[in-house]
Image (cartoon, rainbow over all chains, first blue to last red; front, side, top):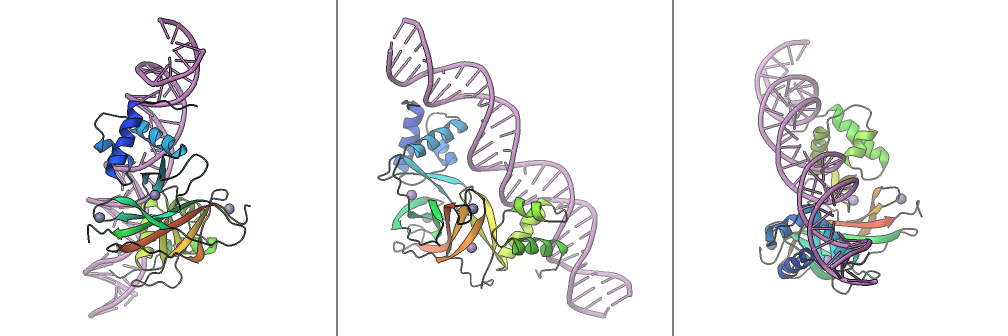
Length: 124
Length: 124
DNA sequence: TTTTAAAAGCGACTATGTCGCATTACTGGG
DNA sequence: CCCAGTAATGCGACATAGTCGCTTTTAAAA
Ligand SMILES: [Mn+2]
Ligand SMILES: [Mn+2]
Ligand SMILES: [Zn+2]
Ligand SMILES: [Zn+2]
Protein backbone atom coordinates (compact mmCIF):
# COMPACT_ATOMS: atom_id res chain seq x y z
CA UNK A 1 0.00 0.00 0.00
CA UNK A 2 2.96 2.31 -0.37
CA UNK A 3 2.24 5.36 -2.47
CA UNK A 4 4.06 6.11 -5.69
CA UNK A 5 4.94 9.40 -7.23
CA UNK A 6 3.17 10.00 -10.49
CA UNK A 7 2.74 12.96 -12.83
CA UNK A 8 -0.96 12.88 -12.09
CA UNK A 9 -0.47 13.35 -8.37
CA UNK A 10 1.92 16.21 -8.92
CA UNK A 11 -0.35 17.92 -11.41
CA UNK A 12 -3.43 17.69 -9.21
CA UNK A 13 -1.65 18.95 -6.13
CA UNK A 14 0.00 21.75 -8.02
CA UNK A 15 -3.31 23.00 -9.40
CA UNK A 16 -4.93 23.04 -5.97
CA UNK A 17 -1.92 24.72 -4.40
CA UNK A 18 -1.80 27.41 -7.05
CA UNK A 19 -5.52 28.05 -6.75
CA UNK A 20 -5.20 28.72 -3.04
CA UNK A 21 -8.71 27.54 -2.41
CA UNK A 22 -10.79 24.39 -2.35
CA UNK A 23 -11.56 22.87 -5.73
CA UNK A 24 -14.00 20.36 -7.14
CA UNK A 25 -13.02 17.56 -9.50
CA UNK A 26 -14.35 19.33 -12.57
CA UNK A 27 -12.58 22.55 -11.67
CA UNK A 28 -9.34 20.64 -11.27
CA UNK A 29 -9.82 18.86 -14.57
CA UNK A 30 -10.46 22.21 -16.21
CA UNK A 31 -7.31 23.82 -14.85
CA UNK A 32 -4.97 20.93 -15.37
CA UNK A 33 -2.70 20.91 -18.40
CA UNK A 34 -2.40 17.19 -19.04
CA UNK A 35 -5.45 15.06 -19.75
CA UNK A 36 -6.40 12.92 -16.77
CA UNK A 37 -9.33 10.58 -16.47
CA UNK A 38 -12.13 11.65 -14.20
CA UNK A 39 -12.09 8.48 -12.12
CA UNK A 40 -8.35 8.82 -11.70
CA UNK A 41 -8.68 12.36 -10.40
CA UNK A 42 -11.16 11.20 -7.80
CA UNK A 43 -8.88 8.37 -6.76
CA UNK A 44 -5.93 10.72 -6.44
CA UNK A 45 -7.97 13.18 -4.41
CA UNK A 46 -9.31 10.51 -2.08
CA UNK A 47 -5.84 9.12 -1.54
CA UNK A 48 -4.61 12.60 -0.64
CA UNK A 49 -7.42 12.81 1.89
CA UNK A 50 -6.44 9.48 3.40
CA UNK A 51 -2.87 10.70 3.69
CA UNK A 52 -3.79 13.96 5.37
CA UNK A 53 -2.71 16.10 2.45
CA UNK A 54 -6.18 17.30 1.52
CA UNK A 55 -9.52 17.44 3.24
CA UNK A 56 -12.94 17.13 1.71
CA UNK A 57 -15.79 19.58 2.18
CA UNK A 58 -19.38 19.06 1.06
CA UNK A 59 -20.92 22.32 -0.05
CA UNK A 60 -24.57 23.23 -0.35
CA UNK A 61 -24.54 22.16 -3.96
CA UNK A 62 -23.87 18.65 -2.70
CA UNK A 63 -20.51 18.55 -4.43
CA UNK A 64 -17.18 17.56 -2.95
CA UNK A 65 -14.52 20.22 -2.67
CA UNK A 66 -10.93 19.45 -1.80
CA UNK A 67 -8.68 21.81 0.13
CA UNK A 68 -5.11 21.68 1.32
CA UNK A 69 -4.63 20.57 4.89
CA UNK A 70 -2.68 22.65 7.30
CA UNK A 71 -1.09 20.57 10.00
CA UNK A 72 -2.81 17.24 9.53
CA UNK A 73 -1.39 13.76 9.32
CA UNK A 74 -2.98 10.35 8.84
CA UNK A 75 -3.88 10.05 12.51
CA UNK A 76 -4.56 13.59 13.67
CA UNK A 77 -6.93 15.67 11.65
CA UNK A 78 -8.07 19.14 12.56
CA UNK A 79 -10.67 20.26 10.10
CA UNK A 80 -13.00 21.79 12.58
CA UNK A 81 -13.01 25.12 10.89
CA UNK A 82 -15.73 26.87 8.94
CA UNK A 83 -15.80 27.09 5.18
CA UNK A 84 -17.25 29.81 3.03
CA UNK A 85 -18.81 29.28 -0.37
CA UNK A 86 -19.46 32.39 -2.42
CA UNK A 87 -22.56 32.24 -4.57
CA UNK A 88 -21.12 34.81 -6.98
CA UNK A 89 -17.57 33.68 -7.71
CA UNK A 90 -18.40 30.09 -6.74
CA UNK A 91 -15.20 29.66 -4.77
CA UNK A 92 -15.01 27.73 -1.54
CA UNK A 93 -12.40 28.76 0.98
CA UNK A 94 -11.32 27.61 4.41
CA UNK A 95 -11.91 30.16 7.14
CA UNK A 96 -9.60 30.35 10.13
CA UNK A 97 -12.56 30.33 12.51
CA UNK A 98 -12.80 27.18 14.51
CA UNK A 99 -16.13 25.35 14.84
CA UNK A 100 -17.12 25.08 18.46
CA UNK A 101 -20.01 22.91 19.54
CA UNK A 102 -21.34 20.88 22.39
CA UNK A 103 -23.52 17.88 21.76
CA UNK A 104 -25.89 15.87 23.93
CA UNK A 105 -24.42 13.07 26.02
CA UNK A 106 -23.87 9.76 24.29
CA UNK A 107 -23.17 11.24 20.87
CA UNK A 108 -19.78 10.61 19.31
CA UNK A 109 -18.66 13.04 16.61
CA UNK A 110 -16.29 11.71 13.98
CA UNK A 111 -16.48 14.40 11.37
CA UNK A 112 -17.46 18.03 11.02
CA UNK A 113 -18.75 19.69 7.87
CA UNK A 114 -19.64 23.35 8.25
CA UNK A 115 -20.19 25.57 5.25
CA UNK A 116 -21.41 29.14 5.28
CA UNK A 117 -22.85 30.32 1.99
CA UNK A 118 -23.15 33.90 0.85
CA UNK A 119 -21.12 36.62 -0.83
CA UNK A 120 -17.42 36.89 -0.22
CA UNK A 121 -15.37 39.99 0.38
CA UNK A 122 -14.21 40.34 -3.21
CA UNK A 123 -17.70 40.02 -4.63
CA UNK A 124 -19.41 42.40 -2.20
CA UNK B 1 -49.00 31.56 -6.80
CA UNK B 2 -51.35 30.53 -4.06
CA UNK B 3 -50.75 27.03 -2.75
CA UNK B 4 -53.33 24.30 -3.02
CA UNK B 5 -54.03 21.43 -0.70
CA UNK B 6 -53.31 18.08 -2.28
CA UNK B 7 -53.10 14.51 -1.02
CA UNK B 8 -49.43 14.51 -1.97
CA UNK B 9 -48.58 17.44 0.26
CA UNK B 10 -50.42 15.91 3.17
CA UNK B 11 -48.80 12.52 2.71
CA UNK B 12 -45.28 13.92 2.50
CA UNK B 13 -45.68 16.14 5.51
CA UNK B 14 -47.29 13.40 7.54
CA UNK B 15 -44.43 11.00 6.84
CA UNK B 16 -41.81 13.53 7.88
CA UNK B 17 -43.75 14.50 10.98
CA UNK B 18 -44.22 10.92 12.06
CA UNK B 19 -40.54 10.14 11.50
CA UNK B 20 -39.52 12.93 13.82
CA UNK B 21 -36.27 13.45 11.95
CA UNK B 22 -34.94 14.75 8.66
CA UNK B 23 -35.63 12.61 5.62
CA UNK B 24 -34.32 12.31 2.10
CA UNK B 25 -36.53 11.99 -0.94
CA UNK B 26 -35.97 8.27 -1.30
CA UNK B 27 -36.69 7.64 2.37
CA UNK B 28 -39.92 9.57 2.03
CA UNK B 29 -40.90 7.67 -1.08
CA UNK B 30 -40.17 4.44 0.75
CA UNK B 31 -42.32 5.30 3.74
CA UNK B 32 -45.25 6.81 1.91
CA UNK B 33 -48.33 4.71 1.28
CA UNK B 34 -49.53 6.21 -2.00
CA UNK B 35 -47.34 6.18 -5.10
CA UNK B 36 -45.92 9.61 -5.85
CA UNK B 37 -43.58 10.56 -8.64
CA UNK B 38 -40.02 11.37 -7.66
CA UNK B 39 -40.00 14.79 -9.32
CA UNK B 40 -43.25 15.63 -7.59
CA UNK B 41 -41.86 14.77 -4.19
CA UNK B 42 -38.92 17.09 -4.79
CA UNK B 43 -41.24 19.86 -5.91
CA UNK B 44 -43.42 19.42 -2.85
CA UNK B 45 -40.39 19.44 -0.58
CA UNK B 46 -38.92 22.54 -2.18
CA UNK B 47 -42.24 24.35 -1.93
CA UNK B 48 -42.39 23.50 1.76
CA UNK B 49 -38.93 24.97 2.13
CA UNK B 50 -39.99 28.18 0.39
CA UNK B 51 -42.96 28.41 2.72
CA UNK B 52 -40.93 27.93 5.87
CA UNK B 53 -42.47 24.56 6.68
CA UNK B 54 -39.32 22.54 6.08
CA UNK B 55 -35.64 23.27 5.85
CA UNK B 56 -33.04 21.53 3.77
CA UNK B 57 -29.77 20.11 5.05
CA UNK B 58 -26.92 18.80 2.94
CA UNK B 59 -25.24 15.86 4.63
CA UNK B 60 -21.79 14.46 4.03
CA UNK B 61 -23.21 12.02 1.52
CA UNK B 62 -24.10 15.03 -0.61
CA UNK B 63 -27.80 14.29 -0.34
CA UNK B 64 -30.57 16.65 0.62
CA UNK B 65 -32.42 15.98 3.84
CA UNK B 66 -35.60 17.77 4.80
CA UNK B 67 -36.59 18.56 8.36
CA UNK B 68 -39.53 20.27 9.97
CA UNK B 69 -38.99 23.89 10.83
CA UNK B 70 -39.61 25.15 14.30
CA UNK B 71 -40.62 28.76 14.33
CA UNK B 72 -39.82 29.82 10.78
CA UNK B 73 -41.89 31.72 8.30
CA UNK B 74 -41.27 32.85 4.74
CA UNK B 75 -39.29 35.88 5.84
CA UNK B 76 -37.57 34.84 9.06
CA UNK B 77 -35.63 31.64 9.07
CA UNK B 78 -33.61 30.37 11.95
CA UNK B 79 -31.79 27.27 10.89
CA UNK B 80 -28.51 28.12 12.48
CA UNK B 81 -28.41 24.96 14.49
CA UNK B 82 -26.21 21.92 14.17
CA UNK B 83 -27.34 18.67 12.64
CA UNK B 84 -26.19 15.20 13.44
CA UNK B 85 -25.96 12.35 10.97
CA UNK B 86 -25.44 8.91 12.42
CA UNK B 87 -23.31 6.60 10.31
CA UNK B 88 -24.95 3.55 11.84
CA UNK B 89 -28.69 4.19 11.73
CA UNK B 90 -28.28 6.72 8.93
CA UNK B 91 -30.67 9.18 10.51
CA UNK B 92 -30.15 12.91 10.42
CA UNK B 93 -31.53 14.94 13.26
CA UNK B 94 -31.62 18.60 14.21
CA UNK B 95 -29.71 19.42 17.36
CA UNK B 96 -30.81 22.24 19.62
CA UNK B 97 -27.31 23.68 19.69
CA UNK B 98 -27.03 26.95 17.89
CA UNK B 99 -24.20 27.55 15.43
CA UNK B 100 -22.11 30.52 16.47
CA UNK B 101 -19.50 32.00 14.20
CA UNK B 102 -17.72 35.17 13.35
CA UNK B 103 -16.47 35.81 9.85
CA UNK B 104 -13.94 38.21 8.38
CA UNK B 105 -15.14 41.69 7.46
CA UNK B 106 -16.83 42.07 4.11
CA UNK B 107 -18.34 38.62 4.06
CA UNK B 108 -22.09 38.30 3.95
CA UNK B 109 -23.57 35.00 5.13
CA UNK B 110 -26.88 33.97 3.64
CA UNK B 111 -27.06 30.35 4.64
CA UNK B 112 -25.59 27.98 7.17
CA UNK B 113 -25.13 24.23 6.72
CA UNK B 114 -23.49 22.46 9.63
CA UNK B 115 -23.54 18.70 9.94
CA UNK B 116 -21.73 16.63 12.52
CA UNK B 117 -21.26 13.01 11.55
CA UNK B 118 -20.67 10.13 13.92
CA UNK B 119 -22.59 7.70 16.09
CA UNK B 120 -25.77 8.78 17.83
CA UNK B 121 -26.86 8.02 21.35
CA UNK B 122 -29.06 5.08 20.40
CA UNK B 123 -26.33 3.42 18.34
CA UNK B 124 -23.51 3.87 20.85
C1' DT C 1 16.91 -5.72 -15.75
C1' DT C 2 13.21 -8.14 -13.87
C1' DT C 3 9.30 -8.28 -10.94
C1' DT C 4 5.18 -6.76 -8.69
C1' DA C 5 1.77 -4.17 -7.23
C1' DA C 6 0.20 0.63 -7.27
C1' DA C 7 -1.82 3.66 -10.33
C1' DA C 8 -4.18 5.03 -14.66
C1' DG C 9 -7.50 4.49 -18.43
C1' DC C 10 -11.81 3.10 -19.95
C1' DG C 11 -16.44 2.01 -19.90
C1' DA C 12 -20.40 1.05 -17.55
C1' DC C 13 -23.27 1.98 -13.97
C1' DT C 14 -25.87 4.14 -10.01
C1' DA C 15 -27.72 7.56 -7.88
C1' DT C 16 -29.52 12.39 -7.21
C1' DG C 17 -31.86 16.12 -8.75
C1' DT C 18 -34.00 19.09 -12.38
C1' DC C 19 -36.78 20.49 -16.44
C1' DG C 20 -40.22 20.74 -20.14
C1' DC C 21 -44.48 19.49 -21.46
C1' DA C 22 -48.95 17.34 -21.45
C1' DT C 23 -52.56 16.18 -18.24
C1' DT C 24 -55.12 16.39 -13.98
C1' DA C 25 -57.53 18.38 -10.32
C1' DC C 26 -57.99 22.18 -6.58
C1' DT C 27 -60.50 26.39 -5.77
C1' DG C 28 -62.51 30.82 -6.09
C1' DG C 29 -66.07 33.41 -8.52
C1' DG C 30 -70.24 33.35 -10.81
C1' DC D 1 -73.28 23.63 -8.28
C1' DC D 2 -70.38 24.56 -12.32
C1' DC D 3 -66.80 26.49 -14.85
C1' DA D 4 -62.46 28.67 -15.83
C1' DG D 5 -57.97 29.45 -14.52
C1' DT D 6 -53.95 27.81 -12.87
C1' DA D 7 -51.39 25.14 -9.46
C1' DA D 8 -49.90 20.58 -9.09
C1' DT D 9 -48.79 15.99 -10.93
C1' DG D 10 -46.93 12.34 -14.06
C1' DC D 11 -43.79 11.10 -17.28
C1' DG D 12 -39.78 11.03 -19.79
C1' DA D 13 -35.54 12.90 -20.73
C1' DC D 14 -31.57 14.87 -19.23
C1' DA D 15 -27.34 16.49 -16.61
C1' DT D 16 -24.04 15.82 -13.26
C1' DA D 17 -21.44 13.53 -9.66
C1' DG D 18 -19.19 9.84 -8.08
C1' DT D 19 -17.94 4.83 -8.00
C1' DC D 20 -16.48 0.22 -9.59
C1' DG D 21 -14.52 -3.65 -12.15
C1' DC D 22 -11.27 -4.79 -15.29
C1' DT D 23 -7.27 -4.23 -18.23
C1' DT D 24 -3.10 -1.91 -19.13
C1' DT D 25 0.63 0.88 -17.81
C1' DT D 26 4.39 2.25 -15.01
C1' DA D 27 7.01 3.45 -10.63
C1' DA D 28 10.32 1.58 -7.88
C1' DA D 29 12.23 -2.14 -5.14
C1' DA D 30 15.02 -6.26 -5.52
MN1 LIG E 1 -10.94 23.53 5.19
MN1 LIG F 1 -32.48 21.45 11.30
ZN1 LIG G 1 -17.00 35.64 -4.27
ZN1 LIG H 1 -27.69 6.14 15.09
